[in-house]
Length: 310
Image 1 (cartoon, rainbow, N blue to C red):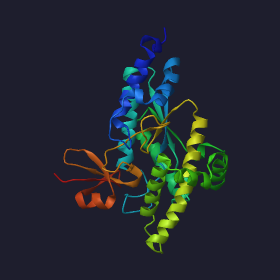
Image 2 (image 1 turned 30 degrees about the vertical axis):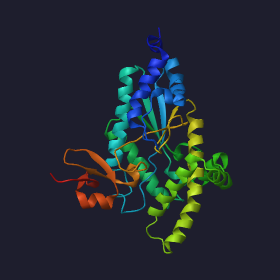
Image 3 (image 1 turned 180 degrees about the vertical axis):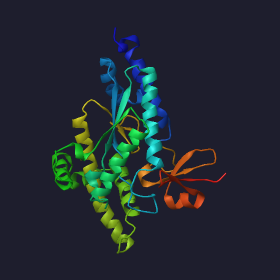
Image 4 (image 1 turned 90 degrees about the vertical axis):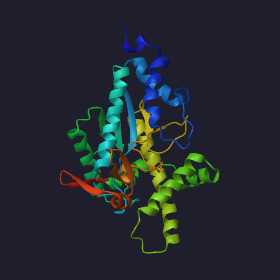
């Protein structure tokens, strides 16, 4: 008898999803139940029916923000280390209730929109390479990686970006129509991306209003390419349970997941630094804020995070 047959399918799926629910990154304060997420229950069922390891895909971990007031540098630091350990531990917990276990594929999306967010490809390469090395050093055996270097052979990044965008991206007119129609998810993403772009362009020579206009224009490109990347990931991993680092309501196609605690629902390790409290708890905040509250800690000779003095 298969492992999946030893419990009712609903029980397996609901128990797996219940492990994710405490970390649901959502725009609504009300807690949800497994039955509020039929999309994810169905995706998980594809694996439990077959008694196979559950595969999750998570687009994210692109590169560090180019704003030095927000981050410690262009390489992964304590924020990424803690986030990756959390994801690996989540898979291990799934393995405790579902013997075939689970894996998460980290689908680094930095290259797909690097030119739009003003981060050079060599910095994105270095970030992705260090992310892989970090997974190895920490012995995170439930995590895999995937980025633009894994598709379209040895072509250069610009050519790969163009091929993926042409094949998958919606047009700016389509996105504008969704925003004019009040599509909640698109409007929220447009505003969030515009804010990030504005904050991450500290050396703009013009006025704030001119920068705001430019960031709104670039935001359409970032959203279009992000969706293109998501569709490419879905084609490369067609059965996977789709996770997102963006807030998502219950019932959405993707399940929003919170990696670390932060007062900002949009905060990620690549837009912030880590401040550890006296009790060891970790919070994400802009580097400039963490610097005022704690002392810098090095790991392997590199800036890692800040720590509040006891």
